[in-house]
Length: 379
Image 1 (cartoon, rainbow, N blue to C red):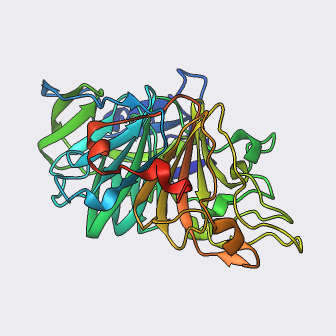
Image 2 (cartoon, rainbow, N blue to C red; image 1 turned 180 degrees about the vertical axis):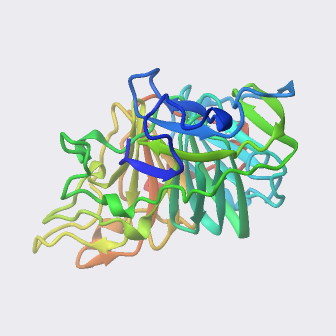
């Protein structure tokens, strides 16, 4: 849940009609049955009116649990397919998948995930996410949140590159960021006005043949429609896709080094997403402005390095991924602690996922792995 949004034309009262000659088709779009956040969507056509259903089998992403730290180089992934078909799963759990997409073809269909919320981080490129609730213009540095059940298409330009997190769990703003009224509190990394909901466009009335691919992990259910899937005349509620750019976020700093949870951006039952951003370092006169050594005894730690200089790691470049698994100590590599002392800031940008379930690596992930990463603390 974010905040209430009202766009387009709506009946004066929900579950009622304004004109018997021009009935709208009301759809409740929400999560957790009728108990979670929701929006009411008003269609010109019956959303259930589908000319034909097809089923297309697809391979579900499979992961081998990791017992070692790993370094992956996503620069080795070549552009392929469209945003969906070119997506390459690299790491994941039984509830969450992390993929890289570098599309070189446009989407000629509409897409909807029937099971998973999605977080998209835009590493490169710009374009428009078109949804039934409106359009979101995006560019590099944007997070885009797409709740499950959202029909969308996405356009892109400028050598696009995306990090995609798909989750069976609902993804939300961390509850500790909200007051008892659901308002984002002071003292957290972003504010309500930083969040960009869809900009509504009046429903499309044209008829023809429109394809919507509904993702169920191991198959697509393909809907063949005679009316456009974006046929709303209006909607209101608290449940919708949105974007927020990392440049609008305000990193939290302290007198000594702050732990990763202060950088949390999104929350789910089995993981959290954090964002490391350019910031001033700790201001204690003898502060060591770099992460201390730590054992993640209950979590596996994924980091995607977007830009800047990452002082605690050597051999890290833009687009690199590290996986640090529970039970094995990790932290700064040799001589990085000494070199960090006296520095007053960092220009790094990175996306972190801390998973409470064990993470595994895919076969595609193994193809881009640096084989000697575990030895990097001994050199």
